Length: 434
Image: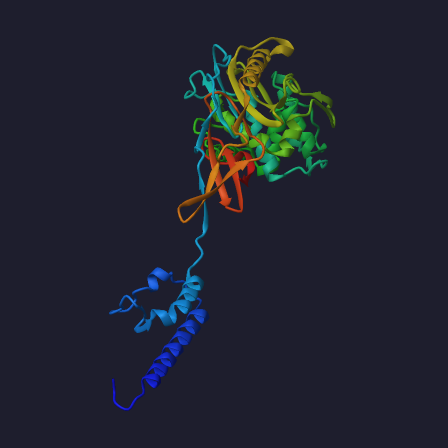
């Protein structure tokens, strides 16, 4: 202790220095908003003793600074965030035995539920076969993609050329092809032309539409095959826009991809879902698809030739538990009937498959109220759980595997049930905290 300096004066000096340091550091921490836990501050300087706590390079008596240090530590400690962790299994398998569907005994067949996956197949699916007028599905799809039809609108006007009228007359005189009469200079709307193509299955209208859309039939064929490649129809080749040529071939599985792409268009569904229509020159025409409106069938296209047999690409809606799913199917190479029943065997095979699919489909409560779907954690410690207020219901069939995903934030989370690839949620539900 230095001579001449009173003890009281030395103590006062020390207190004022410490107070200045405390105020300075408090100001810095408050201005910078630093988030440092108290445990990180304690012992931060070398030489800190039991009675002193070091802050940086300054050592302060704990009895003088404990209140300030406690206040600093509380304000400086960052909040521990609340996190959400999925606790329910990431997959759900519909219980029961996988369905056995009534597949035709010959030819090819395939069926799927749109957005869910395959219900199965039958026949030699790697062997392309003639598909007859089912081909016109691609023709109609391309025309509508290039010239969409708004609800209630008939679309652009198509004028029949003299060459097209002459071709019709020649084919009508020498063949048994499916045709609609046309005259040179005849004007018909795109919608009427598509009715002739898809209801009356007019081969000559396929050529007229191809010429109108692409400028020539060969150019349109290029577009048809490009679209087939885009859809992943690896076993498909289009050599004409109508399917009259035996060289236009595909498989039942490939045609599911075409059917799925087409039936998702509102304008396409409206065309193929029409039972009868009236068009210029011809008058009234009727849809060859006699399944239309039966057992939920909404389309798509019949086909028959000697090379292809009787064929059908079809779609049907099935509603269960307030949810509607669409079944897409194809049957190829069925026996030809006589007269107006030329495609009857394909229609009958398809109807059995639709009924089989309807029987196989069921609803499943993937998540029920009270089930812990996710937990809330803070710093690794559980602080709550999330459940659903109402069951999350999905349509499927026994053996089908769904993906179950919880997403969002602790304050706004939801659960989604998706098909096997994890895309396009089929059922969703909000989560609530308990």
